Length: 267
Image (cartoon, rainbow, N blue to C red; front, side):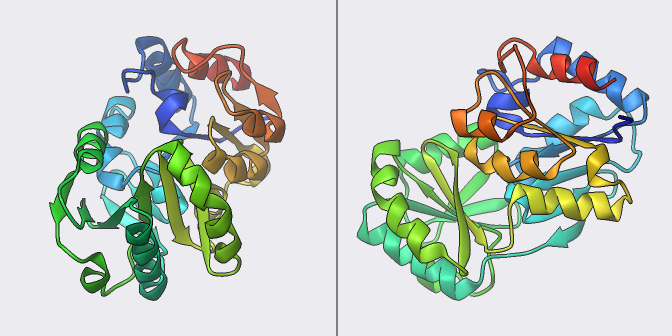
């Protein structure tokens, strides 16, 4: 198969445990770009925290793309133009914020290049450092949310999120999409948003058939894009559910240049 687009999750897939692209992975991706493959980063991260990685991969200003917020937004890298946007309805966002407060969970709301929380806390500080994204304390988030945010994120321990997840999953039907992006992060998006939908939008925009798309991931929020692509790949450190959804599982994990193995496979 002549693959034309490679869609890659960031954390624990492309990035190693130090949140870096390894030299071997970077070299492989540049080879893929030189061969005419659209290399697209696709993450639950906000757009602003993905930009530095696109700068490492793309050598010039040709039109490349990234999919952020788990598929809620698609950006053209060269122009920084947002070509797709689908936010979570504000009324649902306010209800989720209320649920988080009642369950002593930190809720984060996203708009522009910042995220917003109700009060200073260690969870927000850690997230800000890791994501490279500034945050602002705004008091009551229900009052703050007046327009549709791209997402709401619950930031807490996995143990606490596991307890509330079944109820939230039940409530989500036909209203919003909910998934774990990390064990300590539970994300809420518009009901029609997921990485697979973002991948499908971009493939249509670029007129690239889905059977010529390769997607690579490790976590639960990668399953839809793995299933949507012509070749869905799970890295060796992926969750068992992700491996079950994939056509291929790498022998290497994210700390041992898994993406170089992927590029070798598809070129």
